[in-house]
Image (cartoon, rainbow, N blue to C red; front, top):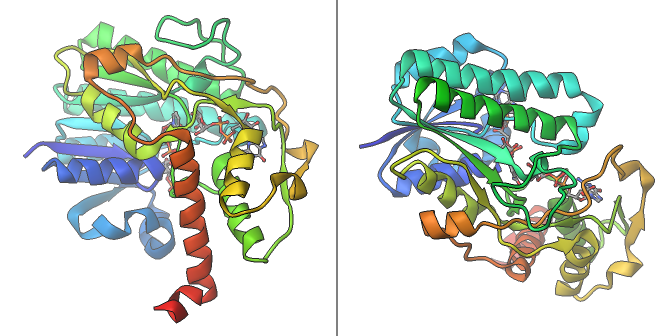
Length: 332
Ligand code: NAP
Ligand code: F7E
């Protein structure tokens, strides 16, 4: 039975990946911050359905000792390094802690594997934010990186560290350059979940408005459940390589709003307010991925399209709202 360690298992991608690996017969271990174990109901909520089938180890990206210990004890065949300070906006507020978590944390994971389990394969969660305002559209593995945020810089450094460990020590390390992927498990601070959770609360009469920043920003949004399949596929290849993973279709924040509001019979223009507080000091205006290599070499393709994603997220938030207000219980 193959053994996997997932850092960031409590996050959106970590939870989907853990489910995928369990379904493939893996023994799944996850690294979690100690506080998560103290407040399991809240902090492990995304793992609710699989909690008794995975083993959690406490540790943090700030501590080499905790990462080394986890790798040494578990002796994994595959490490999926997903843990990170992942919110771009916050990286402008505190670039220092973002760099510490995302750069040092990645370095610690790679060095732990090198020292304690050198034959283990490693997946690094790279990001389309490494492209920034790229000189060409769509972006592929050859496109020049030009990050526009401390987050993007931290991911680019993690990507370079991963490449260096692969080249210097012959380790099997792959970076996925993943474009935005969303789901009903997305954090509420990201724009898609902010929109769908507000749409549900507006529809249910709890609030009236949705304050947003740049409505013209364009992103290539896919479904997280589709994207974690690509992470696993990368580590099953004969040689370690880096891959862009994306749907190839991009939409503006406004288009996301239009679809989300209209799905529940509302007009977005009656509710969305542009609030400059949500603008970023440096914006990435457009990202669209060319995942030809992943499709050709991994056989990967997404199952959920943009409209399907928006409907899935709005429906889930509507259901959550009804359950919280007791309607769901009354209906049953
Ligand atoms: P997420 O939901 O924000 O999850 C982040 C995970 O990292 C959480 O489990 C979090 O644990 C953990 N973490 C954060 N700081 C930590 C620390 N100091 N020590 C230990 N654990 C820490 O992110 P996601 O959307 O699943 O994304 C997964 C990875 O892919 C991230 O590296 C992200 O940067 C990258 N990525 C995401 C996207 C996307 O569109 N989703 C696209 C490209 C790349 P807590 O629960 O304790 O906070
Ligand atoms: O912003 C604009 C905002 O925060 C998307 C992370 O998973 O994907 C994610 O990063 C766009 C930006 O995601 C609001 O300015 C407008 O242009 O949902 P987001 P992100 O910054 O693209 C990449 C690939 C990652 O790797 C990251 O980890 O939407 N926008 N108004 C807004 N964004 C937010 N959050 N809130 C607003 O009110």
